[in-house]
Amino acid sequence: MDGFPLESWFYELPLCTRTWTLLTLLTSLAVQCKFLTPFQLFYSPRAVFHKHQYWRLITTFLYFGPLSLDLIFHVFFLQRYSRLLESSSGRSPASFSWLLLYATCMLLLVSPIISQPFLGSPLSNTLVYIWSRRNPETRLSFLGLVTFTAPYLPWVLMGFSLVVHGTLPRDEMLGIVVGHVWYFFNDVYPPLHNGSRPFDPPMWWRRIWEGGEEEVVQTDAPPIDRELQAGAPVDVH
Image 1 (tube, rainbow, N blue to C red):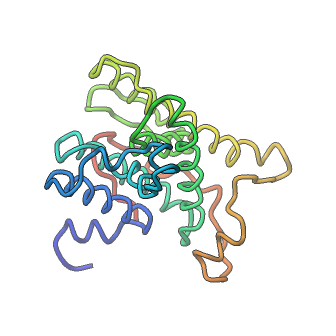
Image 2 (tube, rainbow, N blue to C red):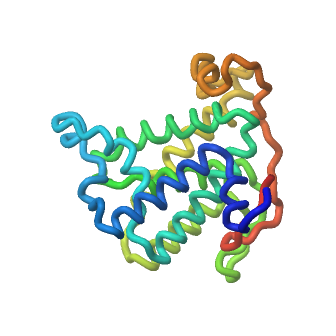
């Protein structure tokens, strides 16, 4: 696509990743311009189910903080690993959108137990964990200081967050737990149980996204991008 590099990058993102990235940036911009406040965005079961503020079920996954370098860091990881997972799941968004639905529902259920009002970071960490487990041979470099294989990435990020903030990163731990449940039932469980895939999207969900067209979904996609820089952009087409 011709145009500015940023425009080309944006339109090359898969559908779900592009939508999530755009809504995240617009939400932070709305807060920065004082059209919204963070108090209107976080997830609260009482606010949702007693005061009928249902938008919180979505906005809790969209707000990563005000416009800042920290937001850029979060958006980078969000779009990068979301893009890699969505691109490897096939032409249709059905499989990846089903993963997002599973992850968001699980996070909403667990959130009140651990008092985690904003769930964008745990959702992003869920995708990072799944991608890292599916690409065990990929080598990464964190800030140019440490080189390791992909499965260690969630733990490196957790350690970095612990050092920087001085507290146990509950959002990253939650993402690891939710991501591991998906990874187990989608990648480990099927070969051990005659190919049974309990976490595959149902047919009615596929019909919503595919319009009744049949598609061979790439469920065992080969690992991609063997040599990556954990702090540098990745181009996957």
